[in-house]
Length: 55
Image (cartoon, rainbow, N blue to C red; front, top):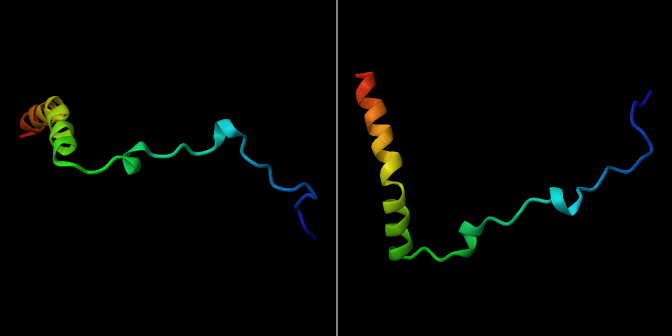
């Protein structure tokens, strides 16, 4: 005995569709990588401080 229904599977609405990843549309340039690394400086510093407290 099957427990399924005769309804077709629901399609995702446009709001539920996955959005394209903007990272794949951007070229990997030295300048973009340097800017990304510089933007993460505060995060890396916070992580280093947290790690030093654990030791």
